[in-house]
Image (cartoon, rainbow, N blue to C red):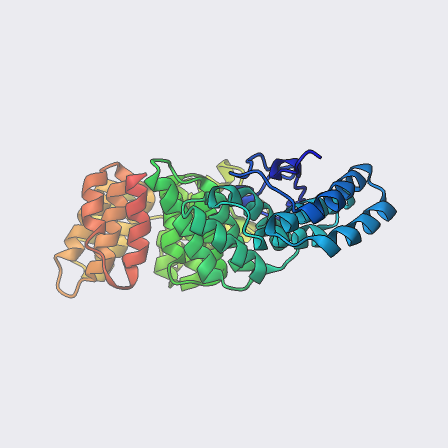
Length: 406
């Protein structure tokens, strides 16, 4: 009889539900051989050989008969391992996932495999457990995988999805962060799917670190899409006031992330509430030019007409307003109008004048100085101003600071 070996068994698993970063191969083949040859006991040799023949023949009646005969005589761990192998092969032939998992459990219980040989079996079993929604059992198997290799990205990714499926989203996020660290430590840029998924799960669970994780996604993969989603995560979780929303929408405009008609409406109305009709009309015209909105539609027609009827401050008007020595808050609004006109240099000058006034809102002034400098291309001075922003505006400043870095 040719002795059975571990490499003789093909493990078949339909694992489409597992994320790509954590998917075992659906037709994976365990190729490693045990470090020693398996030796069935004298009593089990013939029954196991006959069972092997029956399994190869795929004759259900013969398999059941030979299986019963083999089960009656197996006595050693090698016997049990070989028996479980044959049961696994039969389960794979029948596409019987439950039987396959039971067979794999039996193989592991024998202790025949050395640590270096366990990986492929544990990988397939954890994937099957996950797909069967047996999340507690899947997590236990994944823990074994990570004991063998703490840097196994496939196992870390599957652990994250398992924890999320268990309702342990914070643990899922922590696992994904661990995977990102593993990739970074290996000198690799973390895969975008990892950082995006990390931010997405943190947002869905309303975790406090969701905005920071969203910014990490943008930092690694800046794009209109990542900017849009990252800004939305902060807005939806923190519900900033009108000033905060407007400053975030200005950032969305600067990064090409302003595409939603509702956001154009919000941007224009927030600007108009502050009397900044020039910026309100300008952003609507920008959206129309980009074909994101239709100014003739019912959603915008009346808004555009109303804005056109309002006084449109010119630079000359603003210069005269500054000469009246207005208070700090008014100077910041004048600076915003310069910003809306695209004159960032004059905006910065006006914000700095406001900052020098008694009772100035230093957080607002420094934030807007940083914003205007960033738009002008002076990223170093913009970062210096933004790093001074604290309090409730500090998180918005961090988003603008990221803009200066990307």
